[in-house]
Image (cartoon, rainbow, N blue to C red):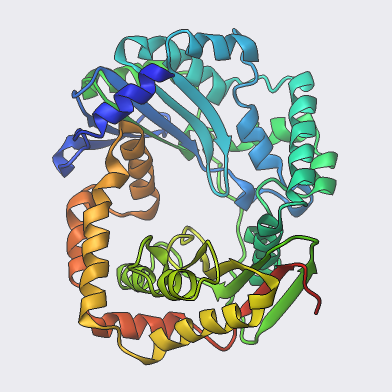
Length: 437
């Protein structure tokens, strides 16, 4: 592990992929979309192998299934037990992990170039032949139930879950990715196996590989490793209902015997494909999403008025396949409840009614263009970006086009999108802490 951390820092010295010509997209005969970017700075390879399956596609009564399935991919294959998988990666200082999320599940691998062939074989088994052993399933399910129990005592998590429930109604995004205690308790290994067999098919997969390799040789390796993974010609993703933004204020208060109150304000947000994403990103930076003194909400409510240690707002950070959330958050003392909420509401309304200053705009744009490169310091970060670029059609020249998208944003753009996408009147408000309705 120390080896990997050391080299991650070395990678940060300037090895990110910079030119669109260095990225190649191919579709393998069985349907896998393979994205490749060579980077020979260090003898290392990162692979992100994603399958389109997450809590977005699970049934309401099986909430938590996708997360549990994704976490269990490394619990056993035909050739290795969970302990042997862990040992095989640890002994060469590699990192091989699996996960399940909202829209994707999969496997991530970071290793030395010389260890890639052996670990690719192991990753292949995890994606195509994971045995999901019954005893490990029982253990993992109990662990999730313990996490859910612990989560009930975390006011911020309780507030975030309640906020999502009010924003999304019956849409799948209303559910916590871990599921609910009663749904997780009812999950069976057979349900995980059924989802694994249905969704884990090559023509539902995107692989991104970045690092020290020859593209032709790597493609041949991937094709050979997954040659027996047969596509499902009839595969299609389940339909997901649309969701509409609220047209009236909503409020929920949950009593918790804690020192602070957790406040979430907001409403339904935007999809990542929204053409106004970049003006909204600049608006976010001015209103509440950047660290330091750049954003109004942290500067005014936290630094000037001393109402909170943490406060922020954003509409772009949760944008995805489905609309995310516009969220304004503050954790504060019960005595400051009204003042804090009034302050959040005032700043949300102000940016919809008063043009931002040219100085605020310039600082926000400089921050966004200047900090952008830090999202691509490691091969793993670039691999994650390639998948995102594929899913959201960002273009593989995004590293070059992004700064220009930001530079084109004007004061009028920020005012327009603030008025169009923020609704200071019809907000959902969730408060969790030592308060009563």
